[in-house]
Amino acid sequence: MTISRRQVLLTGGLGVLGAGAALLPTGSVEAKSASRLSDKEMPRPFQAEFRQAPFLRPSSTGIDPVDGAPVNYYQVTEQAANAQILPRLTTPILGYNGMFPGPTISLDQGTKAVLRVRNKLPAQHALDGHTLSTSTHLHGSASLPQYDGYASDITLPGFHKDYHYPNFQPARTLWYHDHGVHFTALNAYSGLVAQYHMHDPIERKLLPQGDFDVALTINDVMFAADGALGYDDNTHSGLWGDVILVNGKPWPVMKVQKRVYRFRILNCSISRSLRPTLSTGDPLVVVSTDGGLMPAAQSVASYRHGGAERYEVLIDFRKYKTGQRIELRNLSNRNNVDYDFTNKIMAFDVTDDAVDTSDPTWNRIPTTLAGSEAMSLTAGQSVKTRKFKVKRNDTTNLWTINDDSWQDVIASGYKKVVADPALNSVEIWEIENSSGGWFHPVHIHLVDFQVISRNGQAPFAHERGPKDVVYVGEGETVRLLMKFTPNKGVYMMHCHNLPHEDHDMMAQFRVGLKDSDPDENDPMTAAKAEWDDDND
Ligand code: C2O
Ligand code: CU
Image 1 (cartoon, helix red, strand yellow):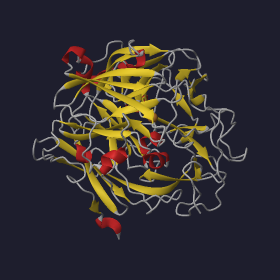
Image 2 (cartoon, helix red, strand yellow):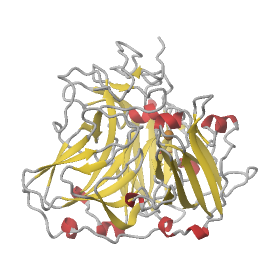
Image 3 (spheres, helix red, strand yellow):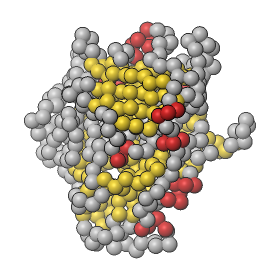
Image 4 (cartoon, protein in one colour):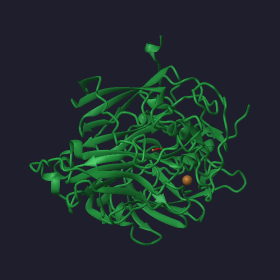
């Protein structure tokens, strides 16, 4: 039996290809639901209890012999598991340590990390039979190329790879996710996604910590009748699920105290963008973007949140009444396919639990935050302006960047690049989306950038901080300012609508090296995956 990529379905029970599969309808604006669950099994908003992913403990700690820095050693195992997403039915997933989302890594700036990722996945994906090789990207980290989750640097089932993370950058919300070549969308959608928090003294002083520093990993999914995840990417244009999950639970409810909370909001939807807003009409105070603290907090009624972007927002629950329910809603954006309940994300129920007022962040909404290298760059420092067009090729139907795709990179023996900035140089990259039908959240690896303009105007308030993903909306042209530091080598740039990335809107650039220079950080050779001793 063949299953087209257009209409495919994750079957119950990984390893059974297509058993009992009923195909899902393609998304259309009129569709009432994408899931095939019976009414009784279909989840409804605000029934599930909120929870967060557990923190991952280091398996050991040590000292880097070269510079004396502390190092935390972590391990995660990629494995098939059954998740309890729905009230009764179980959902087969692929997860780090069998969880969706995977365990959160939390550490301080200055502590390096070595993350061993063991691939104990089945040989093939139950849905389409693709080989379950993986590549793990720590999104938001200026890692060396061989530890950056380079798509074609794959780890096969039975192997592991040790990823080295420098953690020298300012505090931020990062996330690790699968980046396996041409199957990132299905692998990430199946559950290979987790948060990673880096703290520093500035952020610890300004913003809520501990129980009041809350990870929200949000995505949309669709279900087959048996509770398995359904998959339909509408001929690679996008997957539009009808169920919104927060930390792997549908539209959960969180109990909150009457104080200020910090939420680290990650949209890990493979395609959908969000426009979060509060049901009370009160503002969301954006304090951090992808690359950490903004120079100044920005109070917004709602904001546009594309796939892979991270925004940290403060919500002030002090003035609400005990028992009051505040909803975090989604106003959506152009070209998403919306369903009956995709306008809701989660809810907060206000309790009268005693608030610890000795914690100075309990009632603090800071206005001035922190500068950063990315935000202090000026356009005058730029030595070059490069232009990129993100578009669909009419002949091949492939998504491309300047007509380039990852197939071209593979065909060139991983040599072909779309840019070759010098190490430590500052450039302006202009990205143009002239289509009316698609938006593209574009991610540039290695760098933190500043959005300097959108269609010649100032960037939106919520994106006036260091970024590594920019939402290039319909008919929009953005200009980005960035410094290529501190590593030499090749890095990817791509659309983070993952079906676009896989088919095949991804290219690479090379920092600080000429075509003919030897590359000691060649991601295809410098740090290969190894056979895992633990296999039998
Ligand atoms: Cu979050 Cu290249 O990816
Ligand atoms: Cu795209």
